Length: 400
Image (cartoon, rainbow, N blue to C red):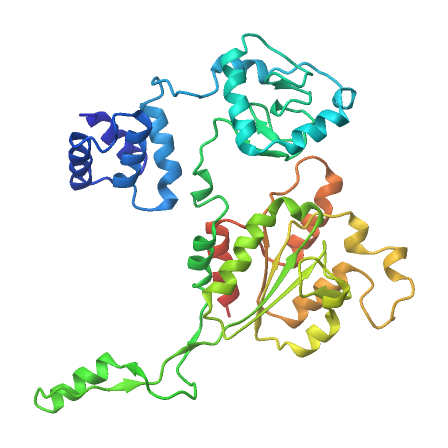
């Protein structure tokens, strides 16, 4: 049964063994898929996929093989064709403040239910309204509209207000070239280690080699030996951009912070926050409250050069925020840097191991917004905030 599906999975890069395939056949025979197509999908994924990193690959193979099987509740191709050819309208001509307030009060569950109802009722193309699935309007479904929240159907993401995209593959974020979850962060961060046995601790760790050697020398009489445990000597300074354009990546940065905190194997960990770029002060809290301000020069003077420094930010701001201007140079101590770039150069000169992790791609909507991205990428090695990017960044931090 479904032999070609097995070969499709293997051609797609999934290493499905015959044992796993026979386990799937046995589960189908016992009715564990509950006689539903969705149940069959979950059963296959449970038995045939060994890692979360392969979820997206499995989804693509599954869709390739079962592409002609209708999915209940899926968006029709006819509707997608309407929405991918939107009329050219003026967005703000369709702004309705009262409708925006009503949409804001709707829960995600209510919007999901309403979308299913609209798809059963809608029979023609609509644009600029507030009820049907359309474009450039105040409806909570569609694309290119002005509703404060909703579900994007078709089109391209613009205002980043949608809480879900209809028809998207749920597990594409588990791919090696996409963003991470907390557990994947922890696995990648564990690569950042330099162990040393020169620690002043009692010998509490079981020494396998010495136990075998001494047992052999004593004629086979078990002689248990212990040794001092090794400790990771890596010290980490984590500096994270907070607020503004980084709000879109708040959940991702929160996952990174949790992973760094939970991994717990660094000798020392310091975490500070900044907005857009490091200036005269950094902050102990992402809200950037003045009560949590720390003088950046004090930080540079008191944290030794052995710290591994990780900047996290999208490197996108107005160019004058990075390279300076009259606002950033007035009434300042002449001995201190005059702009953000000067501060970044001080970090580069002080710490030999520094990287910049970027959750965003290089801007493609104009030369103005690429200036700061390119300038920072010339100062620090910049890596995308993906599985592969984080692994490469950890190797760079350990390079001598």
